[in-house]
Length: 371
Image 1 (cartoon, rainbow, N blue to C red):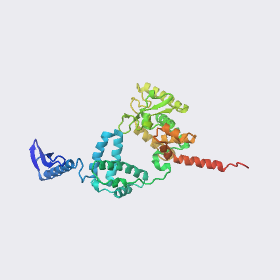
Image 2: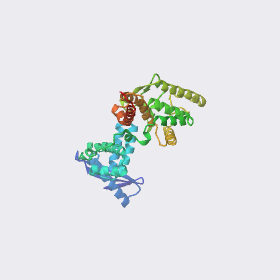
Image 3: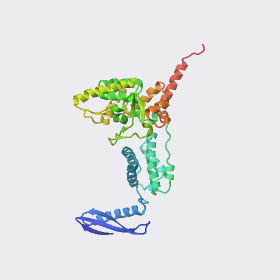
Image 4: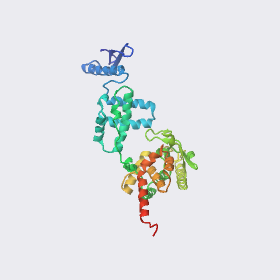
């Protein structure tokens, strides 16, 4: 290693042989200030890291988990939507902290990963989400020669989950029973008119909150044309995540009445504030509504009225449960919700099926068919 000082900084350099071309190349690192023993040590460590990275085609054989995370997220930014990358980065950052940022990737075992996750939580749904995201990152490491044995992710199996749909949902996202919904809407009507209108719209349409926020007036006719979504993470409009999410949602009379009320309210507020906006739901300055404010209002309201918190996503589940209770087929509900596969709907609302069976048994138990 040699060094040279210039403009108050010190540049350190070292040569290495490229294993692919056998050519001698150079790596450098520049540190502020004059040369000191501590600086030389830091420079040597960084130069060695750079050489390892270049001679191992981008990955050092002793690469740490935080190094893998950084590379994987950078790769994801080139291949995925910003909202997807942000979600994956948040989950994987938590996983890496649980397992250990300084853990050597090639030394990981499936048992070690599972044990670390189990020390954090016993919730199988959360554990399986961690496993799914972490396995994807390990696949990337394997495809890029950071690990040579696929057993580490092949052995990393998901935890068994009770097939009752309540276990697939976070407590705050579970649907509301009919009497709970009536109570919540009754409270909202007298506390916050606009959120009351939005909530009724979500319950009657089954749209995701991002889909509702992206709607323009021109998207609504006899059907609601769902062809875009507002990203809650990036604050931008994106195409729907899946092909099935692009759909036409029939506007039944009850929903049509709510849309009429929303438009009337918008006209009054827009005139009052001198605002014009094509968005069906918008603030008084014409911009997108604040999801954070609505989410906070829903959580606090449901906790106050029914004793447990819900999020806006619970209204989508509520929509499905109401339709199912009215005898609408599971496939019809699935298409209306924009689920890619009706199996998703069946899995989430399995507990509704059980409730219907229980109701049917109670009806039959009280019937005498012959005498």
